[in-house]
Length: 277
Picture 1 (tube, rainbow, N blue to C red):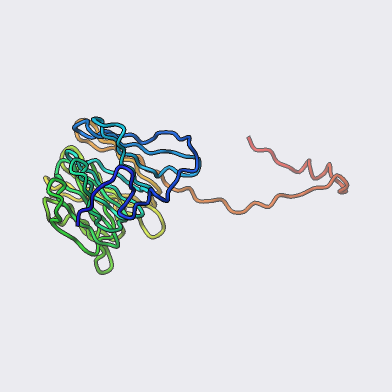
Picture 2 (picture 1 turned 90 degrees about the vertical axis):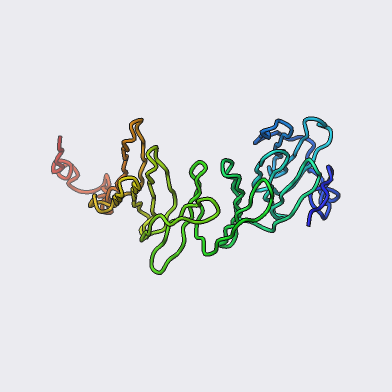
């Protein structure tokens, strides 16, 4: 159910009536502007918090809508935005002065090109049409959501391993099965995918998938060493270069030989030290 926004209210419980800033002085941070230039958002940064969001209408700057305890805010198309706070996730229609609370969310994302608002909480991913503000699909058993530009990938737990999917339209497209959790996915110029997996010992495995060539390469099968971190750089012609960091085995514990100036035959001890060049 939509509720009416009040320029002096923070939620339907009118938090602003009980919320008073501790300090009259603050800094402005994390500023953003809507595509139509009509709305400006910024955070008031105090000494002890920085989660007070202010939403300003450039046509009427004296009228400000604010929210407190904000974790995320996304400016959507036109006069709409999404605000994720401890009060829940709201879809705000700033032009019609209304809002809809969609409940608590761990994270939210906006895929501008696809007009999709993604909401994630407790292993459930909900997909909304950012133009109509309606839910178009929901997916369960989601372990992780990863974005690369306007592409969204999700990882699901499956038996003893994991499955990686890409959000295509309003459905999920299967990409690959992995032995370890996926923590990042990158797309290359030739539409190939670079998949980063985290092994149980904390090391990294990399999987390269080229749909055009129907080819998959796994870094672990090409190297004998564990890999601590990987940086992938793509050249203009599409070639990929890997900068691999391999952990160096730690040396054994070294116990120093302590000598006292009162030791007997101190000069003989010094003379036995061999210096290697």
